[in-house]
Every structure is written in structure tokens, then in C-alpha cells.
Length: 187
Ligand code: HEM
Ligand code: HEM
Image (cartoon, rainbow, N blue to C red; front, side):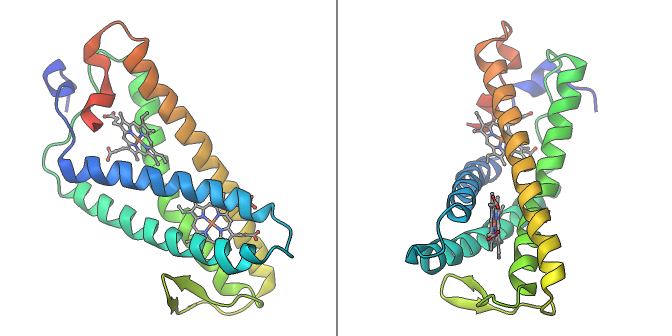
């Protein structure tokens, strides 16, 4: 479909807007907590009693939120298209960044889950008071692979989020044409 100026004034459906901001808060918290907890000394009790289990709980919750969001998105008949006022390369980069973010929002929690499951010393995948089945066989070699993937992909996601935020702010505050302001479609 060709982008038109009329479509650029559309907003995302309320459900997708609410889920976008809920997920943004969850992911920001998880990135901060993941970075913070892995830097804590092992002797600090809250590291394994508080941060690790709650990081896992909110990580699995985020995964579920993202699945709901993808399902809703696939079933939304009419979503706003990138405004025609944006340069071709801006439309391409923002679309690509959004698709890769969606992919990482599924893969990163799956890698976290796989890491927790395969680790021989793990005490289960805590999910708000229940222990989820671990599904994968214990294997510390695979644990190292999943741990590496979880880390590298989580920080790749962070890089894309920063690019995504910079793009949204540029279109709102720097671009001269108000039709380029994609942020209001998400507010
Ligand atoms: C979107 C969801 C998630 C994000 C953005 C995220 C992000 C992160 C980040 C940034 C780290 C720190 C990596 C490092 O610096 O070494 C981390 C560590 C960790 N994450 Fe996640 N995570 C998510 C979901 C999950 C899930 C679902 C689980 C498990 C069920 C999980 C389990 C862990 C564990 C166990 C660590 C510590 C790894 C270690 O000790 O080296 N994460 N996460
Ligand atoms: C963890 C943080 C965030 C993540 C993972 C994220 C991810 C995404 C994704 C995947 C989309 C595509 C939505 C769709 O088409 O279904 C999107 C749209 C959007 N996001 Fe974010 N976002 C985050 C934070 C933010 C922030 C802080 C802002 C504002 C400064 C923002 C502004 C927007 C806007 C304006 C759109 C609509 C873009 C358009 O219509 O072309 N996002 N976001």
C-alpha cells in the first residue's frame, strides 16, 4: 500500500498503544535489572533471592505480552502506514528496526528461558510464585551458548531501541513538517 498523508494522521488502535507503552516499561526495566544484577557480587543476598527470580518472572511476562501484541497486530485490519513525508531511507530503516525489535522481543526471552533451563545449578524458572517446567535437558555447554546469545541479543535490542527513540524524537522535534510526527500515532 502506498503511504499517504491522510494515513499519517491515523493513530494505532488503543490496545496496541497501551501494549506498546506497557512493553516499553517492562523491557526498559528488564534491561536495567539484567545489567545491574549480573554486576552484583554473588555474596549480596538480593542477587539470587530477588533480582534473578523477578527478572525471570517479568521476562516471561514480557514474552507473553509480546505474543498478544503480535497476534493483535496481525488481526488489526488497518494500521497506520509510514507517512509519505518521510524520506525513503527513513521509512526503510524504521520498518526494519521495528521488525528486528519484534523478532528480538521473542528470541531474547526464549534464550533466557533456555539458559535457565539448561543450567545445572539453576533452581527453576520462577514465574510470580510458580516454578515453570524447564523443558530442556541440563547441559552446561548449552547453558554457555544460551547465556551468550541472551546477553548479545539483549544489548542489540537496547541499541535498536535507542535508535528507535532517536528516530521518534527527531520526527517530532526536528522535522519541519508536522505530518512526519509519528509519535502522536502512538500516544
Ligand atoms: C525481553 C526480555 C528480557 C530482556 C530484555 C533481558 C535482558 C537481560 C540482560 C540485559 C541481562 C544481562 C546480561 C549481562 O550483562 O550479562 C540479562 C541476564 C539474565 N537474564 Fe534476561 N532478559 C529478558 C528475559 C529473560 C527471561 C525470560 C529469563 C529466564 C526465564 C531471563 C534470565 C536471565 C538470567 C538468568 C540472566 C543472568 C545471566 C548471567 O548470570 O550471566 N531473562 N537479561
Ligand atoms: C523498550 C522500548 C521500546 C520498544 C521495544 C519499542 C518497540 C516498538 C515497535 C516494535 C513498534 C512497531 C509497532 C507496530 O507497528 O506494531 C513501535 C512503534 C513506535 N514506537 Fe516504540 N518502542 C519502545 C519505546 C518507544 C519510545 C520510548 C518511544 C518514544 C520516544 C517510541 C515511539 C514509537 C512510535 C512513535 C511508534 C510508531 C512508529 C510508526 O508509526 O511508524 N517507542 N515501537
